[in-house]
Length: 480
Image (cartoon, rainbow, N blue to C red; front, top):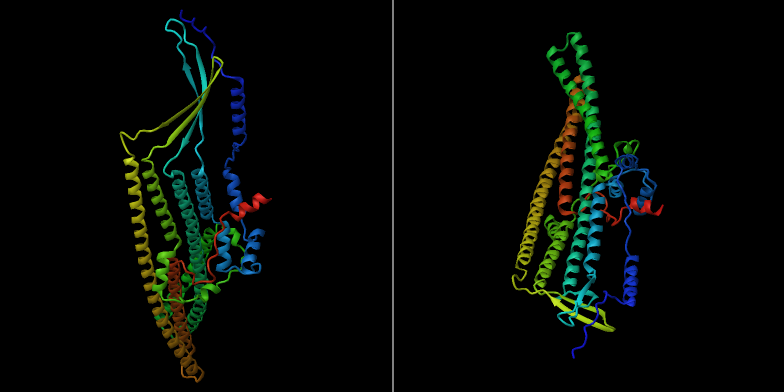
């Protein structure tokens, strides 16, 4: 006789299995990170920016550690350190670097297994109901073809690119600080030179007006010198405006409000006495084409593109999923192992591979374009510097000639051969030559700054210090 069918049973999972699953879930969840909201307050952020000052104690300690003493005067070096401390573009670059570092952590992670339940039916007879059992199974993904290592290499290359982007941001900040300080220096010196010429113009106009009243000078001469005086007065006032605007640009280049520069004693020694290129421009250009921070960043991006292509090529080979399971059925322990894999029938990952090839080609083209821009910028800046240096030499010659002429006129005046208006006129011409010479010097300094930016090689003051990977302001806040 056929054996009687098994009576229907409820779904069953053994209590030990439930206990093990519960313990495992609790253990996994105990290591999870917690979410902490951190909303942005526009009012608090603006207040913090407006409270920034060059008297910040931590900033002064940072400068003292770099220069060996607390700053008494704020020159290019000290202002650059302040910009590295305050400027928001460096905070953005640091945040991107932190994101890239987190990407490395993500790339190194092993894929988590997944848990699901299989319903297994055992038909004893066709007529009778089928008893069934729910069996827990765990899916383990096994990556093949070294995908995890390749993915990690791509993330590490992107992290290196982010580090070099931080260095590029530091160079850009330094260039902005230098240019703004140069504008301040130029405005102050021009104002002083214009002040001297304006004083001479006032003397000349007064003398001619006295002579006009005495009938010894023509009204045309008086009108001409009045016009010259008025123009010099307008130029003098405009220099004050330019100095205020340069001060505002300097505050923006540092990352502080304008009032933070009130009462600051500036030093322009680095602009007065720059260091000329010690090597030929060609040698420095070759160094820049291989070692500039943006060149290094682009090379790292290309390495990331190479790794991305390698990863997509490895994705042609399917991963393996191992699914061990357990079931308790009618007093019997049943253990299962279900291996599975994708079948590359309809495609062999050709689309992502083609995209990765195109991305690598794009990065290579961007690298060549960057080198071309560096060559053009270096050649243009070097040519401009050489031309500006020639103008300075010509201005030196003209100023020397005017000084020699002024000395001869002074001797003639002392001998009684000419009158005072002629002496003052000669001094005015000398003052104009001095202004022209200084304008040529300013253009030379600007051209040298362009060379400095193109080569990422310092000619004004000491070398650029390395930007901190973490914001020194946030380090202070976290330690307090």
